[in-house]
Image (cartoon, rainbow, N blue to C red; front, side, top):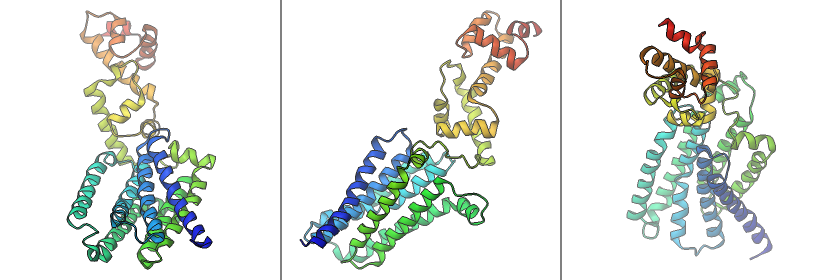
Length: 345
């Protein structure tokens, strides 16, 4: 292998290898655990497998066609994981965390059926160009769907209603990178499609630089400012609030003295940060006040209906972990003491 070819192989293969390592990190080691990290990891993993196939086949045309089918099958999932990554990162709908499994199961079924009935080895004329072109077109359609998810951000930025945020730059970069990659594979000839691998390597290192800058790493992996630039949509917040009331009333979660915000968030399909923003920005209260309001209402009901329990016992039943905390909170929210409230009844 000539020096120029060796360098070409090195840089193109290194991008695929590093992409695969990063995907494993995102799926299994990135902290905190978040579904968007998993989608980003799967997206990079599928892309790295597809690019790796291009690299090895370009430099070894005798590579088994089974590897070719494996790489192209991975390409079939690049678009879906890109779409669900963006949806999980910017979406507020709880359906995001319910529908992706069914969506993925459907795509896996298609890949398995086509792969077994029409294997690349015995149906090369079908794969080239029909199935391969269909895979690239599907990838492109998912990119369009991802752009649609970001339509409000794009419109606001285009009209200069909002400033560019780090998360906007990150998502726009990924979308542009995907458009370049799918174009590189779709429009270049079969022999020269190593250009796709080189494009991926180039874009990967630019994105890595962006990810691992101190400021952006916090934004992308800790999800600390996911909705820093705007509140949850009023209509969506209203639906979530109704769901929240039903969960709190039916399951009486407030009776748990050690109740944590993530436990409630999980019940209504939100991340801890989303739930916190729902309380702070849309309901105007913090987590402690939110839970204590339910506890005090339950305590009032018990004070009116139950004469067999002491005031202290009622406090414990309603989720307070001490008598003093119960009395102080009751006085603050009800404007009177538990004993005085009971006498008023």
